[in-house]
Image (cartoon, helix red, strand yellow):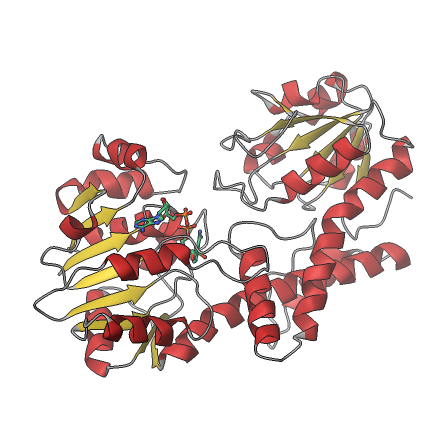
Length: 426
Ligand SMILES: NC(=O)c1ccc[n+]([C@@H]2O[C@H](COP(=O)([O-])OP(=O)(O)OC[C@H]3O[C@@H](n4cnc5c(N)ncnc54)[C@H](O)[C@@H]3O)[C@@H](O)[C@H]2O)c1
């Protein structure tokens, strides 16, 4: 089939490349000229495992443009993969979605507009109404939410747990299902509202698990239990499963914070107070800040102290720093008067970080530091020579914000090690 993808971001590029790999002809449209120029030169503007190889392999079936009308010429399906960031009120900002809908030209055959962007329940109905108002009855509408996770997005797209297709007209759903032929996954066909809710509910459940285990971690700290063992024991229960039970300094990224907030506001706008989700969000905010208290317990005032942040991206495998816990941490530490240095193998902090000395290596970031905080569980940090790291630091204190490292090993190197929800040195 012939496919257009609107939005050359994390979702749009993965969608375009994976659909091309399935044998479809794909045009990716973005409004940022420099991004499209880079893509036309063969550059991949994001760090995502396996994506460059897919681009290389499918060069002949992948094209890029800034011209919306050109992009949809002769296509069967138009995917919308534009950003839906939070507004000041916490609701999803659908400006980019509406731009795509309003710029759709009249077409003389049936095409399907498939929504991959994460949108509030009711968006599909509103888009359908707008399309009808504009006389675009032959543009079908399908909600096809995206569940890929950055860092594993190519694998997630090609081996999804499920494909969700919500449609007003079963024939439109069929087109989108056929487009995925070759991918072996259960297909959930449903109404548009339910498809939209499946996406929001999935993310809300995942963040609930994270905040749940983080609260268990905090109680472990107060009572002397080890949350790593607790999570292992809980996760082996088949009714619960092991996923998203890793305690840490909280979730971040371009999806979890905004989607949980958007669902909370969607509920509130509909007259319902989603109390559980309110608590989940609040727990996450506090969790990021607890690191500062841990540092102060060992160092006293942080004024003039140098704190090294190891990892900036919101998780390993991506350069995405949107809503990364590192941003909150850096700002909080600076507010307490600390000097902040940092290292990340792919994220450079630009333009989100202010006054943070981003070093070229983890060891350089640790030079003369009074403490280090492991913020992102990059595999490189497990491999680091912690003896050398300690020698470079002014004071050997490590807060392992992801419970990634072996406490015993760190202690052998003379570190005071603090994890999240783990017993302190006895
Ligand atoms: N990032 C993820 O892993 C992920 C996973 C699942 C769902 N989502 C959802 O998918 C959507 C896209 O997320 P993302 O992370 O890829 O966003 P992104 O910010 O990386 O990319 C969005 C792109 O859309 C472009 N754009 C804006 N207006 C446009 C228009 N009118 N026409 C064409 N392009 C336009 C922007 O220039 C940008 O390059 C969001 O709704 C997000 O919640 C993201």
